[in-house]
Image 1: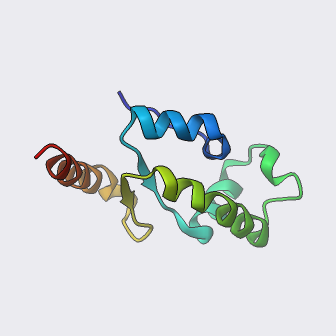
Image 2: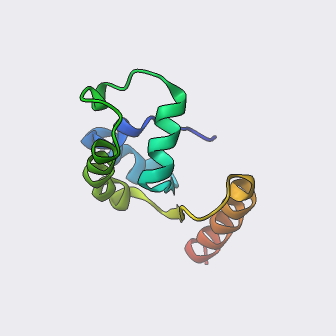
Length: 103
């Protein structure tokens, strides 16, 4: 199964514990510029960005969440990977991860 969590889920101790115990976690890093663009284009209300979707607020949010993602990530999809390549690169990274953990 593939489960996609909202960004705020990673801040929960219970969610991180469940991820560490029950999942292979792929962290799709986006960087602050792409994240800011995605949030701006989405035009959805973001409770964690009540003060506005500014570049500085997005950088602060990423800084807050990064240690949590680092805690649970098994595979990291780096921000320079183009969207069109996400699936193929992720499959390759997962194959390598599984090969190294099932030997």
